[in-house]
Image 1 (cartoon, rainbow, N blue to C red):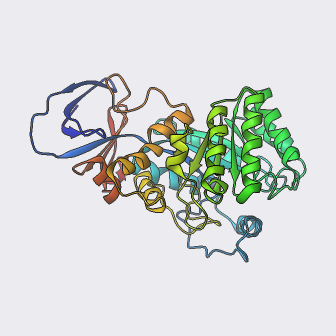
Image 2 (image 1 turned 90 degrees about the vertical axis):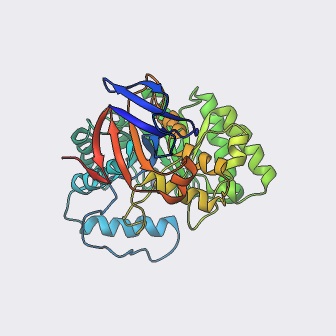
Image 3 (image 1 turned 180 degrees about the vertical axis):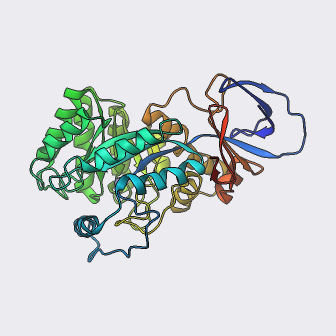
Length: 385
Ligand SMILES: [Zn+2]
């Protein structure tokens, strides 16, 4: 396979030769006119495959308040009324995501003392079903808290035993009201099982900042630098810049990454400041058509646009940064290697019609081709049977 006259994310133009599933060579372009942009496979650093209701008749949002706790309660009602297994709706979402060019993702999966490991088993089945198309990392996620839902710590540990890759967490203070009581079991499981951590932290202001500092301190103490992420971290966007900068230094020194999906209703962390201070910043979809959000479609090129929109990005290098969050940076956090449009890397590529990377982020054009290991798996946004 040769992709002719391809503009790479860095703006250089080549004919790309693909052989045996890998990028074999960059050759001089055969044409002088810009034609296509060739991107690396997109990476979704934060999704909830078990929550989505994609493919089902529309379910109106039922939360009666605006707090995280209100949404947790609303979701319990939606879950109880559900008749279609999570494997089916999760599969609907994975098909849509792969057709839009995402070939790696990290999915949080709800675990509490009501559900047990049921959702985990459903999403493990999805992972198996699509193993030839996409890699799915699973976070054992205590959506109802750990102390508020007795028995959850044991279930999180059992989830790792049964195939989850990381242990999750949720607002240690805001939900469980006990910083150490929440973080102790999470870090104990991670150390004992040799897995990473990814904690949802919505708590804002100085309370959120204190929790970020505690997580960074524990990451260093446990020798888990580079294996801990915090998702959302709205607090970083809700405190004065000097406090955010000091916290960024702590996070960078502890190798704690920050995930942002470009939130619509909360403060967005100062992404550029974080990166300037050496923090790994990556992106994800978060909720897609579920009890939490009516929005989302799993398209990570669109997600890069939304992140850029929320962060007030305008220049090409800023759009490239938003794109990096849903590609190379997310790949590093997920441990996907080798990765990228480079000679010797797997030919996992996305082809769009655009003149440059920045134009592709701004216009998020239809995916002409999605290529996995040199094989076309989707054309014009539709999976090849
Ligand atoms: Zn989430």
